Image (cartoon, rainbow, N blue to C red):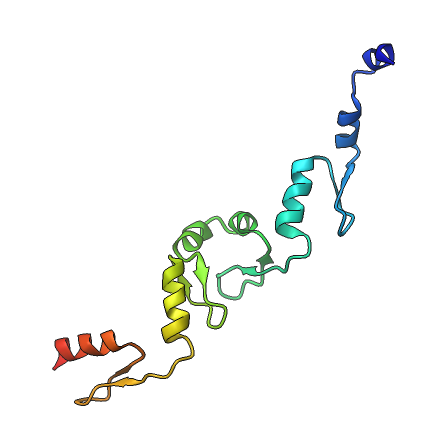
Length: 136
């Protein structure tokens, strides 16, 4: 067998890569490389296309951030600035804590802090204090 292997320089591992012998157990899609199958199962298989192009009237959707960057290279700055998005209103934030504060105190909340002097109202007490300090 060793002499046969020497006559044919392609090993069985090389044959597997050339023949797309790394099939996905969930959907059956086959890949040449084990790493490609790993990326498919981790990021794509069974996942919804949840990333949308923020350009107005563009209907492009994808599952992966790198695909969105390839679709529109100018989007890189947009993605890096607003990595965390509110599922309810699509507002974007740089930090997870900011998104948490938005969902807890702002999104869907009524403006319960009202100025006694004018018609200003806010969802946050600190904003009302700033308003009173600067305006009255």
